[in-house]
Image 1 (cartoon, helix red, strand yellow):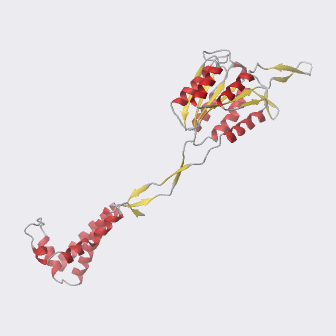
Image 2: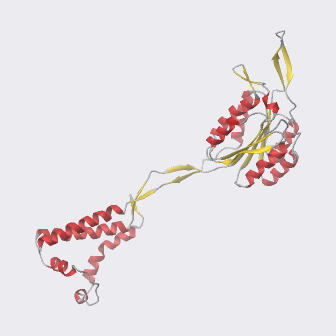
Image 3: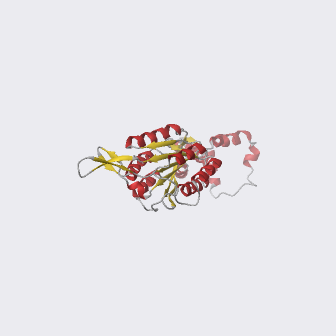
Length: 326
């Protein structure tokens, strides 16, 4: 507990200073004083020696004055410090949900999963570690759509991630339009560090803006783009004769993804297996570490009403004792 205005406590000695320093003639001159109905009765009671009850009443009136001064000094109770994480960066995930993301060329425990399922699984864990950041998502296929606006509620963003599905934005790939839409979201919430993570398994064959033009725009805005190429390329499928057949899953334009990353100062990664994608996220965390600059906040609760209530009680007891002693 402490006082917001501790200097007010000096007023406790004001009655004694007035009594000692003010001349007697001025103390007894009441011609200019404010009328107080029972002041004369109180004055007579204080001037004579009414015995033990009267002396106790004087101490009660003194306590009444002290309580008023304590209340005026604003006593407060400080809570335990609260550590609030400050937002470190704005992060936009630009995710490919075109038809080719349905290919089951990833495996976990020898069980095949689609590319989008693996992206959901690993990106969910990545988002859980983004406490303190603002995250958003843009989905793209034939067209690009804002899916999650920039928000510090990473739990909701992770939940929305699980609800996306293949083909919900079309079957083609508009990488340039998706990047421009992500940049527009970042522009509305500037910060010192702004990052885009682009994941795609194909090549740009739709949209208005080219990926190269979008990368130049990101460079002008100071936004880094990390690109991830997804897909095993060639993978084995069981055949009717028991022998594996080789399938080629889509045509990944690695050169364009590399150029986007190089233009913006980011990096390009290739994810052919589930461990590859997990290591890529870990590598991005090392490239863009979170600086622990937390904000410490302490809340306080006003306690002035306690000495005020005590002052009223002491005043009532003092008046009662004075009445009994007189």
